[in-house]
Image (cartoon, rainbow, N blue to C red; front, side, top):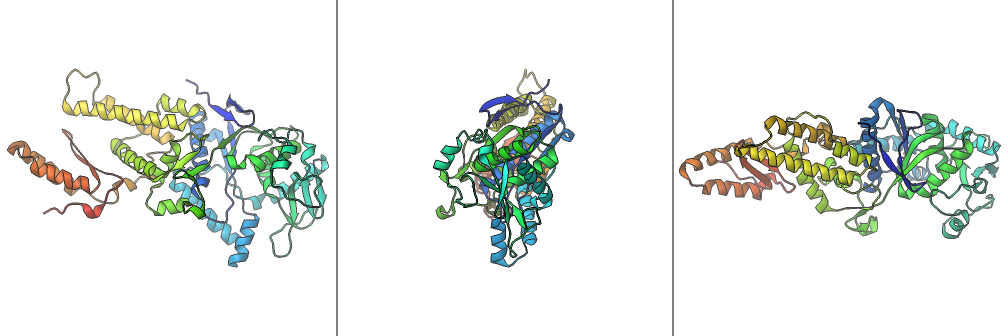
Length: 478
């Protein structure tokens, strides 16, 4: 069965079939970080969202037929300010920050994109695009700056749904004497001796923020490509400006086909801010003991187009669920992802529906395994059928970037629970003979107090660490 992926296009405000411009091949660009500090948990949301889309595209079209580009902005005034403050070379700061970013996003189970261009590697392409815009009458040089002439592009504002005049009335815009119009934006600006700069036809300087994504996407994906993504905070002005300059510079007059934006993130029901004490980087959460897989699972349970709320309770519930699911597929090899999961993701990346189906599948496996353990007669399935369900479940979870081998290890907390498993199994065997279950109940109670879920069936005894598992509370065995 051919899977049709449907995505909501911010620009047309319609949900549309994804029809690759090059049949059978998909090209996607997502705006990446400005590398001067660690990524906060709001920055991580588009990473998880578009990583999940990347996984779906690879599943449907084949890994070799999907090109995913996410940039690093390594020339920016915030980076310059940090270099001036710390006395460190800019390259040292950006290299270090990119290393942090990779480590933190790897911990969330995000695949590395096909290309991760650094803005400083494409300065020549930016200068060439700016020159084209001047030649076409869409940009002008003034006092060492080059600015895009917003009034020269009639479609400006279509993405955000506002007219230029409304934007001027409601937006904070940089007022400068060299601007023809308050909404004109910088493509190139001069650099003094203390700032990084490159030679250009307009003097030594550096690019404005918006031009870099247009130049890099064109260099790596072509003038037109299938999907452009990012957080909703980038819709205006960044993406609006990207569209304007790319469409005016490109011979086709076109740019990205489908625009996707994820909504914002809150923490415990409030906007994240340092003043409220609820500002966290991804590394903060990892260092606090939240496994990256748990963070990812919390994100996936809210549809990307809806605001999401990070809470400790959600994380604890995700932790407990993932521990159970990992126990469910221990020793299992992944099979083929279930159509329910693929179809949910293909329907505008409905990860909340996909996680619902994972819960449903896990419950079915547990119920059927329990019936088999109890020896229920007249069942229409056997152990091999349940084993196949487990393989399907694992493949389905992995399509969402969950239950991956590289994300494992956290669920066992590094503790060998075999001694307690053996003791409980032995006490249960004795109790079956003596009919005195008090020692069994006492040990179960102590293990539960330590944060373990105790499962006993004909198949044996299982101890599963829960979100509150405390090694120090394990009962001492004589």
